[in-house]
Amino acid sequence: MTIRTKTPNLLDNPPVTVHAKLAAAWTSFMFLYIYVDYFHLHKPGVIDNLRAGVVFEFDISPTLLTMMLASVAIPALMVMLSMTLPARVNRATSLVVASLYIPYSVFNAVGESWDWAPFYGLSIGIEGLLLAFILRSAWTWPRTPAVPAGPTTTDLRQDLRQ
Image (tube, rainbow, N blue to C red; front, side):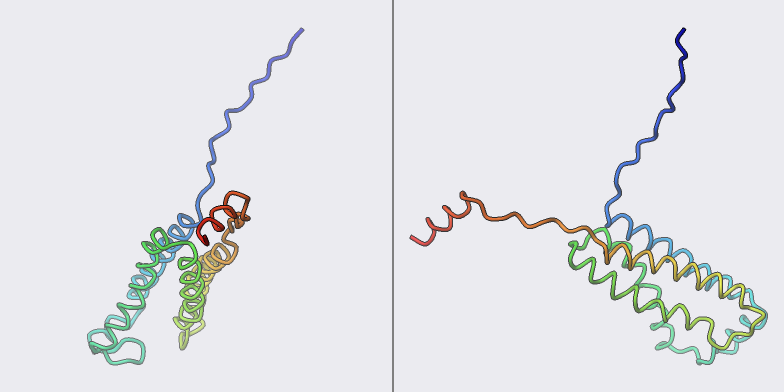
């Protein structure tokens, strides 16, 4: 007597390049980054401050808005750069930018009351996890071993010297 068991069809799980992982992480970071700012507008008094020309402690000015735009534009550009830059430049850029955004993310909670700790704790926590993933992915980027010079390469070099 033969017992037949069904073997499950395994789903294909092709490897994902580091470029794609970084682009996905930067995309997730951007969505979260934008939504945290959007939901911040729902806090009592924020819209009144905006109407009065103040963001946090700063007067709204062209310089402030330019700096705010740059702070959003950099991670947005990292989505595209993660897919297009060569590996070595991509790795260095991701390490630098993610390292700079960790303290910048924490800065969002400065001066807030403990009543808002869950909101800022969750948002900064998830942003921190995404940035940690970016740092880890860039830091552990697989390296291709250098191809040692073989006899053919050595012969070509000798021919060039003559």
